[in-house]
Image 1: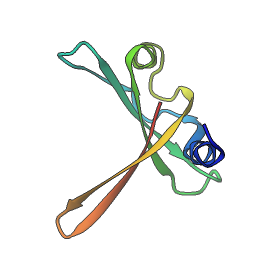
Image 2: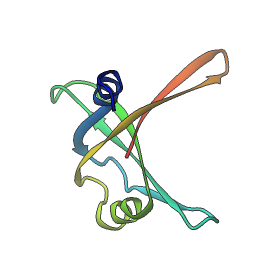
Image 3: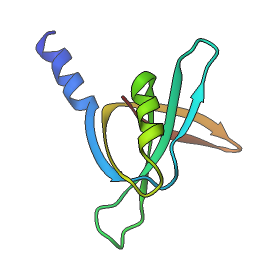
Length: 100
């Protein structure tokens, strides 16, 4: 890995901690793999509005999260940011996810 590749890797890799606002949702696929999805509300201060971070995990980690974590449990996640955009009515929506 050269220096430029490492800098891109380092910028895209993040760690967050928060409390689950709902139970993680697990989905199994015909291929045998599974995915767990959940959101974390992130706040700078107690009275601030939350910024929601959408998270996905795959495979054995996904099964462990779904089995051991429930609503209001604290969880620390780390992974890579991905961005998606889609058109909803007359405007574009952007979704940022942490995939680990």
